[in-house]
Length: 285
Ligand SMILES: [Zn+2]
Figure 1 (cartoon, rainbow, N blue to C red):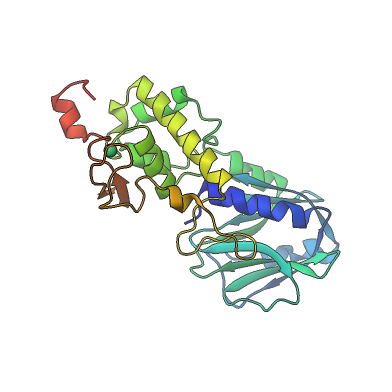
Figure 2: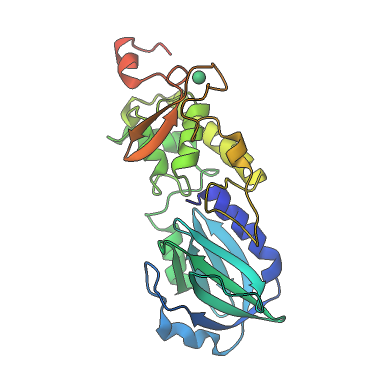
């Protein structure tokens, strides 16, 4: 499932081909996505709509158009968004096609599982959705103090807190596991037990993991691709995610898998001490 680094990669891939381009039409596939496309707004494309910019916010992709309109996409689990030649064969599960001018090109949104979102929103609607209470700060803007306050006020575990889009936007299963490993914190630790310096460590770990993942175009596991056939490289650098049974790169202990916050969670039992043991032994780490 694409998370912040994968979505950032897609956004960067779209910027160049969409620079100076206008959308001149939209066509729908036979099946609907999670949220139906607003056909009553198709009139927007009866005049060419220049693309003003492509941006990421959390796991959302916003494409600003002239006239106060925005295309908003969420890749869900299996969404692919790319610019292709209009002559290229239409791939199965293509739900939306936007015709571009100049050049014989299209933006295509393809999604096998159909958990993705494609919508056409006004500036106000878009900003309400992206800066509202539902969407917390970008991890890079999140301060350790903010993270600590959110954790302390929560009855949930650290893994659930990191994946909560209202705490910070864009983090999912992969980067939550990797950041918790980097910070040496057990994913099932309760937020309320987090100390201030641990919040600092976790915030820094999260940012460094995400920066590195963006550098190598995210992680490709099964379905994430960008552009025509681009694959990420971060799956080659996973320290714990999907590494069950392998030795911890830091201490050699065997990486384990647990169900935490309803998600498959990977961690090192030695580097990331279990919460129960912590409680018995006080502040030792
Ligand atoms: Zn370890």
